[in-house]
Image (cartoon, rainbow, N blue to C red):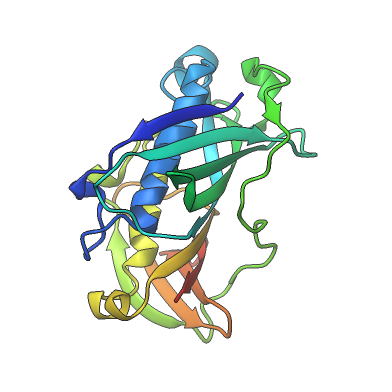
Length: 243
């Protein structure tokens, strides 16, 4: 089942240059993937109340081909990809306009039993079977290795989790991590470089009043990002590519 929607970009979703970039595309990505699960009756708008279980996003990957203006709607599609895991879901995503690819991505998600405090399988929420498509998103596979230590990384800033960062489950919502990582660089950096790829691995949940320290390291092919909690544990791992 492929879920499709046409959407006219709004100025509020733009980058500092006034165009829709990687941040706005990730917003669309989350809107589409959550809408897909809502259509199946398995979204976080109802799962916690019905099953005591929530759907958690564990990884994001998005690739940007082209920034968008506001002249025409964007055509967005999302679907479940076939995979060999019995516990994880993979959703592909694409954005096109007039047949031209603007962005593509993939999200990895799982189901978390809020009472037992552990992961559970899709069967626990009666997830419908045979919804996968024989289609893969036009994006690279998730990285197997990310930064696990701030040693030799450069500290950039500290973000404290506040009310507007929170989601229904009381932890910092997925999209706030996009801002968290992109804000490791200032506007002058983005005037000189356009972000084309962003991968995020969500490692530990962050809650209100917690502080997250953000670190960066520039490699040969990409920029590594890391967010650490006050106790030194990893909150989030990231990878950014620019041109």
